[in-house]
Amino acid sequence: MNTSYQNGNYNCGYVALKADNEQYAYITVTKFDKVKDPRVSMWVAPNGGYSELTVPWTWTSTAPRKKLGYRSWHGAGSRHQLCAEQFYSGSVVIGRKWTP
Image 1 (cartoon, rainbow, N blue to C red):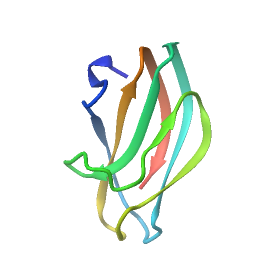
Image 2: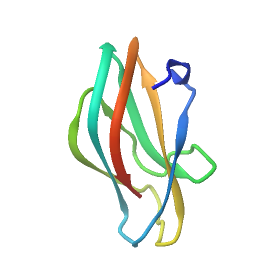
Image 3: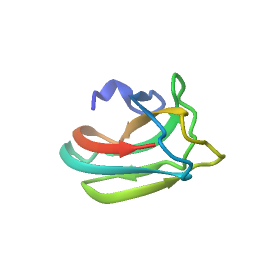
Image 4: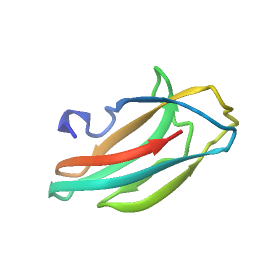
């Protein structure tokens, strides 16, 4: 992740269409190559925004699939994007997959 997105600057993108009415998004981090000790927080936001529609989760390494609950109801057909923010020193390259 580009370190210009640290502490209050968000990196949002990776837009996806919600296919069902399940009130959880899923993120799986498949790669976490780091320098020093970065932490990366991820959450789901509305397409074109950065507000937290889900409770954020912070990764420090690869992790099993994480289920993030939506804070309000979002149905099939809505568009969402994945957002991330890096904390602490260092840099990280992340590989992941997600579904809204």
